[in-house]
Image 1 (cartoon, rainbow over the protein chains, first blue to last red):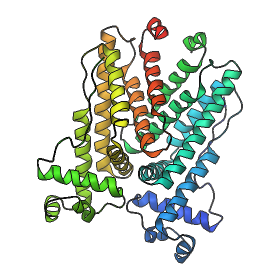
Image 2 (image 1 turned 45 degrees about the horizontal axis):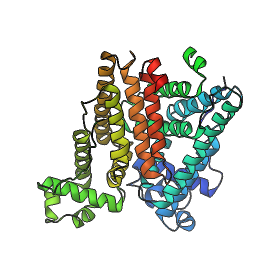
Image 3 (image 1 turned 135 degrees about the horizontal axis):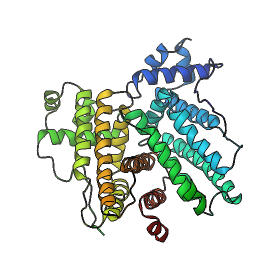
Image 4 (image 1 turned 30 degrees about the vertical axis):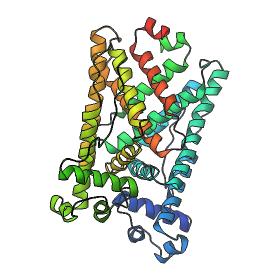
Length: 210
Length: 210
């Protein structure tokens, strides 16, 4: 089976002013939540002069939209593409990464920032457009794996997109429940999603044996 | 098949001061979003004297926690319990209610309020406790239907709870994607969830025929 991959929004010390601002924004967001976030509070987590914040961004809103883009770019870059194993193993790995690393890997601050930003997308077009692109990108990753599996005869000849959307939607629900509920029971949802994948994608004899 | 049931957070004119405050809060939340909500803005949607708001609530936070409770109580009361048909039909109806009425029934304001409140639960214990209770309540509703189905021989003899949690988590993800994405494709996720239910719960010969 493929190896374990870590997810960390800030693996290294920030190398640029923008990265330092992103980290200060992240830290302030984790401490105060989106609704109570102010430039002042972001500045409290920023080691350089606060005037730099105003130099780089016209407003708090502009800074937060940039932060949302930064966070999603990092996520898109860090979700690993695993090419060892067959398509079923790759799909198990991709789902496992989300449940074991993204959700279970002590990224609570990241998940909190995600749900806060996602909530903005319910009433702000700039957020919604960017989240839609992120959703499409991650769904496409599942589509690619499923198509490969169909070509190789590992999976049944299904339409890949509905299955990919189901996987993505369930993982999204799991991320939200994990960070907003006292009793999310993620292991169970992880296992059920793998059951769905087996029932929906494996040839009938293989699904019975699994 | 069971009939259609409507969901409406405010089906009638508010009968009490609390209800009128809840409606004003809801309207202000839909207009401004959680982060930009102020007592002043809630007051703008309130027909009676603003001083009543301060009389009833010590702070904006106290008002919003009460609003969150009100919203979830209404939801718990309004999710219909359908007792005609067998357990499979009841489960299809329960899932259909969430996709066709809750998500597809022009409740965008309600769904927006839900994701905004849910985001608060990521960093506020009062919200998290209440949402956990709501999750448990709705999961238990699915558990009840699945248990009935097992007893009646309509469903296989599975552990009902994991299946109920999977259904609930996917619907939660669907509600979030619907209100925060430009391309949620809910019909597809609805159909995949019904496929999961058939594969996971129906006896093998019935699942093949379905």
